[in-house]
Amino acid sequence: MNKALVLVCLFCFNLSFAQEIIEDEKPKVEKDTILNKTRIKADGVAAVVGEFIVLESDLDREIAQLKAQGADLEGVTRCELFGSLLESKLYAHQAIQDSIIVNELYIQSLVDQQIEGILAQTNGDMNGLLNFYKKDSEEALREEMYEINKNAYLAKEMQDKVIRDIEITPEEVRTFFNEIPEEEIPTFGTELKLAQIVVIPEVTEEAKQAVIDRLNGFKKDVEENGASFTTKALFYSEDSGSKNNGGLLPTMNRKRPRMVKEFRDVAFNLQEGEISEPFETDFGFHIIYLEKVRGQEYEVRHILLRPELTEDAIQKAKDEIENVREKIINGLVTFADAAREFSDEKETKFEGGQLTNPTTQDFNFELTRMEPELYSQVQDLKDDEISPVIQDEDRINRIKFKIMTVTDRIDDHKADFARDYLKIKDLALQDKQVKAIEVWQRETIQNTYIKINGEYRSCDFQSNWLKE
Image (cartoon, rainbow, N blue to C red; front, top):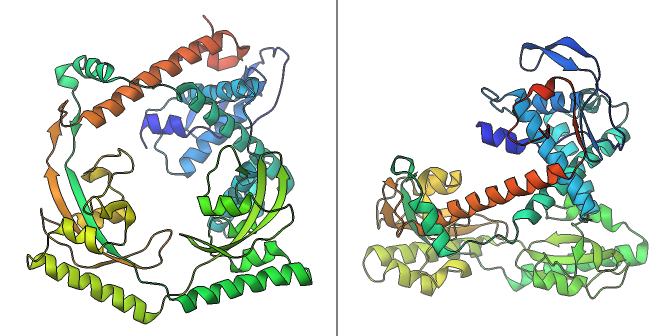
């Protein structure tokens, strides 16, 4: 992890509230067991940013967590880490002033996932977790982690607000590129354009009906026998993201819809306490329990089941794509035409199977930045070569079969304005956003009460935290 990434990761921190001016505390010499250096350490409050106190122990804990996650802190100074922590506090403080709303249900769900994840790695050692956070109960730990995540959420929302409406014109992109010194023009790695044809096994009507009947059984048991919807979701739902929370989803808002349309249409037409009839989305079949309505916000639980695939359906799909591959190799049809005729993947078939890079939104995939799984599937392919049949899966399909090809390859090269316009545009936009954040920070620091204590007064901060 490089220095910039370490500083970006430094969002978790302990929180308290204060309005009063904090007097400097007498420093003491102490051995830093994290960075193995002797340093002067202020005992207690290290800084105040608006309503938030930054404790010396906050930074110690952050350093310990970064090292535990394998971060390389070589070359990263304590002052730089402290400055990043101050930035997070500043964002969170201003978010409160701007009345940014916190999604409390989402934060609580995040805490649950974090604790479960840590316990899974430590064989359920809750006592060890409590000792690390210096807490005497799980409830106290959850309260602190809730505050940590809430303010990290506020900080992220505030930063997004600062840059949300920033746009860049083609002329600004050209100016940005022309101002890059010749020796600093970036080099882009080898890029591939990829295409694929996907065949998905067909689900039988009998399998669909079996799932519908099972969901109706859950619904009936809850409504007529008083069974727990939460428990059924915990045991039976196939949505790995929500089943451990009893099917509880992030709060749905009518004004900011995030779920697929079919899901929203059902959820927003339920009455509080009502369970829906089974319905289908691309992910499978669901029933929804509307737990609570608060204005435009809906708290829902759901159970997801996906129909079973028969062996016959799986074999039929595999035979079909093998046949398509053979036709392409024998020159009976082009890859692009075969994709348009045979592929079951809506996102790519009408583009002749051409894959879109989700990061850049163009057709180019930089070889060194590919997802590992995709890289393993195409790394040995020559231009226009057809891959063997690959068995794959995704969030929607447990099994799918595909063949892939490389339609174009661009070797390592210095950035070219015409060919690499979209990448250069992204760099120019990022540069403009960074400058906007710098202006925002400079102005907000001047208008916010900030107090830096002890050894940190001697830090050479990039931002004017000392207001000199």
